[in-house]
Amino acid sequence: MKPLMDLFELGGRVFIALIFVVAGYSKIGGYAGTAAYMESTGVPSLLLPLVIALELGGGLLIIAGFQTRIVAFLMSGFCLLSAALFHNNFADQMQSILFMKNIAIAGGFLFLVVHGAGTFSVDGKLRKSA
Image 1: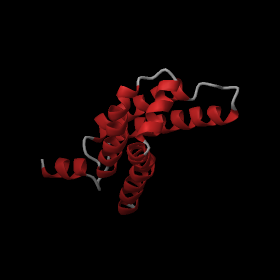
Image 2 (image 1 turned 45 degrees about the vertical axis):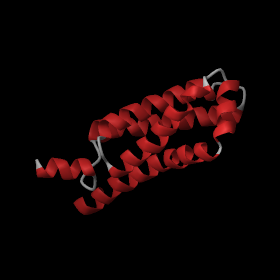
Image 3 (image 1 turned 180 degrees about the vertical axis):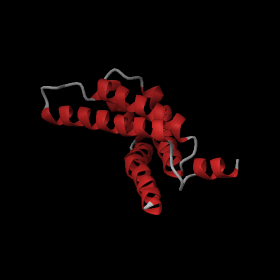
Image 4 (image 1 turned 120 degrees about the vertical axis):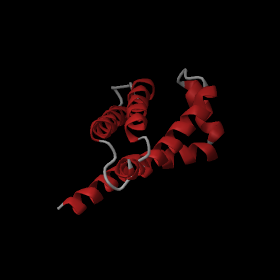
């Protein structure tokens, strides 16, 4: 049963992080459009490199399971902030759904904060060798 749980931990990390890896990568290719969207919502586009680094880098670190608790904490905050800044038009059903999606993902990251990355992770390997 333990090997199966280890695989579920790995799968969970991949599933929760993949959306950020893809989003961060797509923001590189669509930099101008993303910057314009950020400005249109009152968020300075000079923050875009930080957003890309957090989404792409944070997503990859979660997948690898390196510094998982710290990165998951930051990613949870990012999800909550993104929900508040970009998905706060509750009269629009799609924005309400996206708001709740961000809240749910933030909750998943909080589980990683509490439980860590698990066995199949860099953190797990470092813990085992210590």
